Image (cartoon, rainbow, N blue to C red; front, side, top):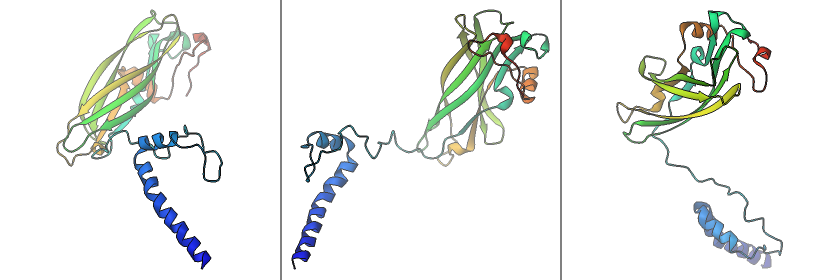
Length: 228
């Protein structure tokens, strides 16, 4: 009989604790206040874990979208910008160079709203022996297409760079575009967003060949070499 009563007491205690625990998980801010106001000891007299411990459940940044985000990528043929004096692939002929190192993107849309796409584009830029000066304005574009289909819109942007006497420069370019939707059933998965430098046909062919020139930071241009 004593064992049965002990078991019932344990169940009663657990039932009284569970609602408070659930409330703490649903309200992270309230949980933090209760932790700071506690005595700092557990029932057995041992110390609690530090109050600064990270919460188990991270708060959501915003409401979920109506569908997936558009697929964003850098077009391979226009991922690099290489000026070659005389058109000959030699280190001594390299002027300004550039490469799109990567893109991070996030989008937001709900109900019948258009898609707002926020991008952070990382450019790695350089100047070789034939570079005319410390400043250069590169040009790049962002295109919206139907997935694996026709281009719907394309816009060009200028990227002014001041090398300040250095061989290289890294620039994060933040860009936001808005993509209209035909209806509430049109999701971001129907679109693809492409990014690339405004290159000449010769530059595009050079990129397709897999060749590249990059001026390394702190290293003379003569030490750089093309890689396949």
